[in-house]
Length: 162
Image (tube, rainbow, N blue to C red; front, side):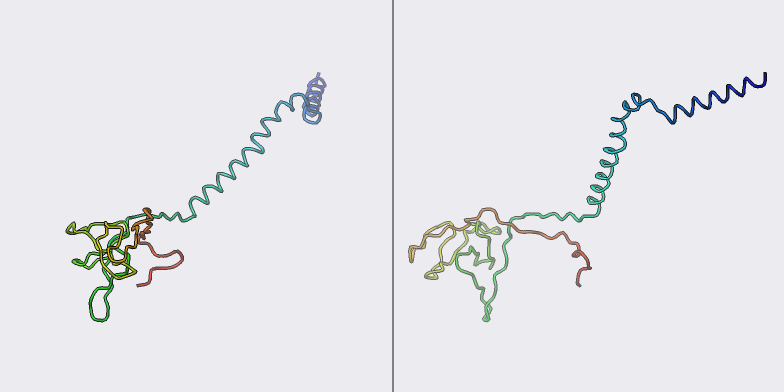
């Protein structure tokens, strides 16, 4: 009687080895789509996501803020009088130079003046024709001025110079 359990054990071992060494190819072909999804596409998508996250976290994303130009103080000549460039709106009361699209002073609502580049005659900014020489001007031809404001951080790669 002791021989029967040995033959059962040997038979079971041979059946197990047969299943491992000689697989059923029909059943294995059913697993090919799963192998493609989990073995190829999954790791590729994982690597792409990791790369995207790395680039997103390490890149500096600067933001440009577009603002309307602000009036600036006029430059001074050697004698201390303000100097106004031709064809640029300015307020002689407050000695400010305004952007090309401005017509009125921000402080008192007074009309801005413009100096003609041809004959140096002054006119109000709302007039498009010089009364002295008849030259026609269009102030503010570009209605999309771009003024970039800084965000207060030091430049990349170094600290701000004090």
